[in-house]
Length: 363
Image 1 (spheres, rainbow, N blue to C red):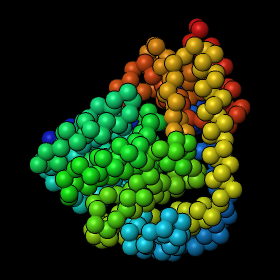
Image 2: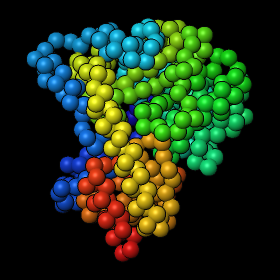
Image 3: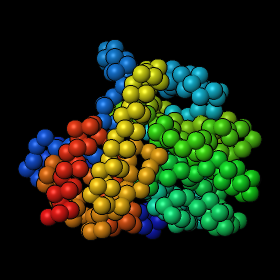
Image 4: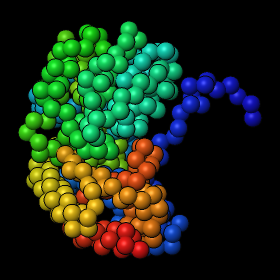
């Protein structure tokens, strides 16, 4: 088949998602496996969200509320911004895609930290814009480095806070200096998918800087701390001018009915929220201690995951761990060929991971 495809589309490398448990078990002939590769909530979904879903299932023959009234109202009340500043997405990924489609043209530049969430690069390339990479500095986003790469063609900057895959954060002081120094009109997108897990009191919360006169976008998701990854719902907070632009190109029913009711209910589930955060913090501290006892270099994180330097081929470690029924994430595709990333699991899963890693490292 001969079709004409733009070069900028052909330049895109497909996002490498983690395989589902069932697929890996079939492929490797294993069962009772555990997955610590996709930064998911080990407790499952919010119980209040599950109750709301059960009720809403009786109305699946109806189209969703295209305005997303109920979840937007709940989000507005929780974070203290006006409803017109909020845009719902099919995961926060879709907000990224809408921002890029609405605001970037071929030849425009968008500055990305590297490594960071791979979707930024994919979306920027998908419209023919040019990704400009700024390497991390000591595993952290280098804001002065980003500032130095700004040119007359720069239209957008992405900041992942905490950064995926390193779990490091931008400080309030750093961000103040950065925001005050960049030219007006450059869209700054701060992705806060893991912000609820942060323990560092100096961490930036970009919601504090929201202002209708400043082109700043905050991204949040229900996939992580609320355990709704399978429903794909997130949101962006931004000036009214930007939200009106995105709503012009947003698909009419981009947030499905079950996702909307689940998100609204999850925001009320403070008990589940605190339980998740407590579990993650305890799990991180346990796993850090275990890595020290194994003599492995690890990197403390402000998210629900962290990096481990296995000092061997990460893909090989990934394969050997799979054969023990433990799924981790190789960081080769992020440019760290000797690192793996794991997220915190249930206590029994954390213990099983440590045992399996110890055996693989020593073999």
